[in-house]
Each structure stands twice: as C-alpha cells, then as structure tokens.
Image (cartoon, rainbow, N blue to C red; front, side, top):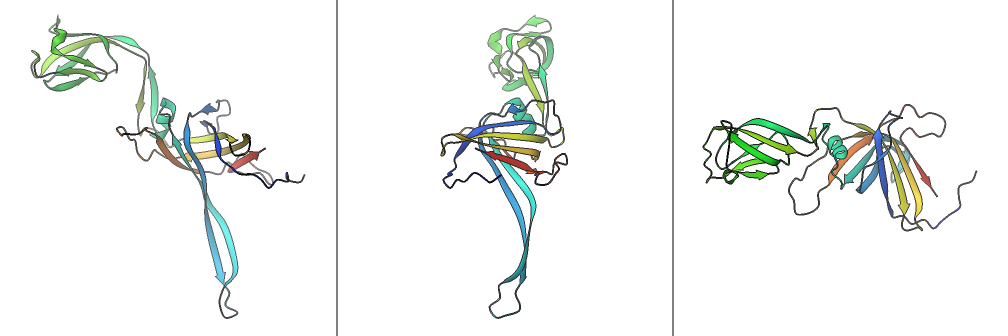
Length: 246
C-alpha cells in the first residue's frame, strides 16, 4: 500500500505520556502528568573511506550504524510514582493513624523530627505530665522548641499526635526502572491530528537534580536509553519504537 501522499505537515505536538513497567502486560499504562519535554535522539556512528584515486579527495565509501537511541523527559508532576522512579527508590504508603507516646529528646532552638509528617491533635508530655503548648510549636515536620521554652536541653519527652496518610520514598534502594512508554500526541499545527509514539523498552536514568528550593516551578529531568525489546520480531518491525501518524 502506498504511503499517504501529503506535503503539508508542520508539527507542534502536545499530549499525554503514559508509562508502565516493561514486561508487565497486566499493568495499566498510567499517565505521568504534565510532560514539559519528551525527546528522542539518535546516536549515529559514521565511518568514511577517503577517495585516494584522484586529486581533491572526497569520500569513496561510508557506513552508518546506530549506536543507540536516547530519550529525555522533563516531568512537571512530582507525584509519588514519578518521584520514586526518578530516584531509583522504593515507596510505601503509610495509613493515617494516631501515635501514642512517641519518645523524643528535646533541645532549645531545635526541631524534634517526628516519625510522621503533618501532626495534629498534639500532646507533649514530660514524665507523664502534659507540657503547656506555649512551650513548643507544632510544624509539619515535627515539634520546634523555642529558646523561651521551659523545656530544657536533653529533656526526654513523649509526643502523641495524629498524622495523615502519606508516602515514604526511600531513595537509591532499587535498580534503574525499565518502562514502556506511550505518547498520545496531538499536532496543534495540523488540526489536532494524532501522532502516537510507542517506546517499547526504556532504561530510565536517575534524575539529574532535585531542585528542592527555587524561584520557579520544579520539574524532574530524566534521561535514558531506548533498549532492544527482544519480544518484537519480524521483517520491518522495530525493536525500539513505533510512530503512528494520521
């Protein structure tokens, strides 16, 4: 069948990126959120043989081989799944609960870091006697002891509180993830026609930086290599990626 005959085809794509673990057919392709950048690049090796048969030189023969296909993503959404993958981590959901008498040691001018974030309904006790709340500040990250507090350095205290459901992400505790990506692109320069790209097997790299404080929106910049998918075979079938254009 002949290719669709078309000359006019400017391109400016927007769209949704979906991901799932590579090789897990039963897993859903889940949106990654707002992808600010999605880019494929090809690393090509060119070998040339010079023409030595005449004056002036030139190329007598050449070969071109692909060393690899690289992918770059910049993700705007630091959701737990994206963040966990970006730091080679392991994530666990912690249900909201009440904590009774968590033991801590207090120092003036310092933070008591509680085991769980976002404490509410806080009661601080010293030797089973409640401490006046004027002597401490409840913060999302724990309990802060001001210099004016009657609590003294190295006081052994207990803290009871409730905390919301949250996710603990332990960074650098797992191997680099391998993902299958699908990009549902829409061409804004051509009446929103779809351009769909499937990347069969991506070896994702770790986030280059984590900008925890900055004056602009944060993002996760991730680079990786598109690996050979051995499950793809046949004449004219790519083991790397496929594009579909309307």
